[in-house]
Image (cartoon, rainbow, N blue to C red; front, side, top):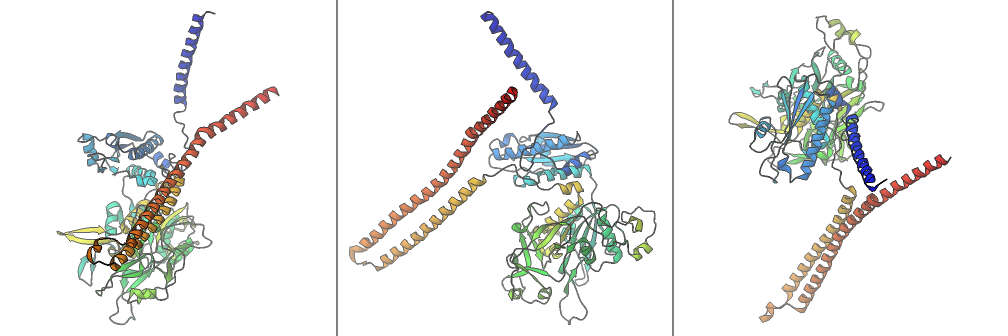
Length: 639
């Protein structure tokens, strides 16, 4: 065979290989386009079952518009990385929706129509300093009837709730009707006439906020059925509920209804005069409970125990012109004692409570309790009488001994529940039930009775009612005839978050927080923290020695002879002291630099070891595995 023929065959072979490779890539892309493997530790790119069910039940197309300032963020790789994470999550939503979500990615350039649309939709432009123009990274969604929902800006520090936020937006657009919340309140939260002041009182701010988001239907405190369109009960300060009302609540929960319950061992907002009290005594706070329901459901709560906390106590004014006094019963629950993994409390700063109780589960309960608000370990249980007849908050310190454990002040409770009426509805309810032709979801007909929940129940129970009152979290000011509310605590946000979460579908509630895509170098952070501790210790020692030396110099200065020309000269002892300090300072600075170099060296050594493992060890192990596989194959062939 000639050389020319060999070259032609070689060229033809290479061409055929190239064509075959391209064909294989095209075929693989066509066959495996929907195949993906999520190898991240927290399954960041895998949608939860609740989200998939929401997407599956979309009836009409939904348009999503992802606005991201791509050109304006070229100098911010961190933000661009998170923007790509959001984009990938949105693509996953669109892929799982089977064509029901139409995703558009838009770069709103400055002074463009796209920027105007983003601003009109309510998206937030943020000034980052890397560009004079505002940066957009938000989502706007519309449905077929013209409803619009937005996420003003995807905050990187809320990445754990990225899937929940998008799923909530999609769920709201897929079900545009406002949720109906049934209010069962033993106190008047709406606007009312105050007989003491002879004036109309405004509704509680938290009630007004809830009205803006939901349809609040006041059921009162005496009813035998819950309307069918009510999906959530908001129970506040329940006192002495009748058997028929308790049965209606019980069966509502048994049928899958959700509830947000506020009880209190000592509600100052619900103060009423009592018979038998001396004349001139102030009205006494009232307690609230649902003992029969709580006991049957396996929830422990007592009106005879108030939590006092020495660490979280708030300073309150006694009204006597003195300085504020720390009140162990008024608590400011900070972020360290909030559940950062639950959507209702994850983004809150502080929640204020007053003379709250605590919640627990019965020993034989099959429920799951997740604390949302907790006390510190510097807390204890006190009887309500210590607070009712207290004239000075400082008196709570007398005999106060911390229990050394944290108490749950508010909790999410989920799981199977047993009915508090195992034998069916009370006789009075059965006798008074009438067939009015209305298909009521909680009809008291014994044939409709459920002895246990049809699925896992979902409740949020809070052992404090005072947190809902304006005085605990918001300041109301009159501004040219308008009432302006300025929040100084997150109580309102907590209630709205809880209502939104519980009023959503069961699928939306099941979408919990996820992990973050950014993974810290924990080993490096530990090395850095250790070196910084050593550095800070050495620095403090240097500062102390500097202060001691300056004090010594001052003593020598005051003791020397200032007569004549010698007043401008230093003594030999002073000069020796200064020389010693200069040498010592140089030595300590050298030590500081050594500590810093040691930190850098430790990190460099760690990086070198990782490089050796990735570059040399892993390929070496793979080579050994391949050689072993070839050897085994040859052994089988010989055999």
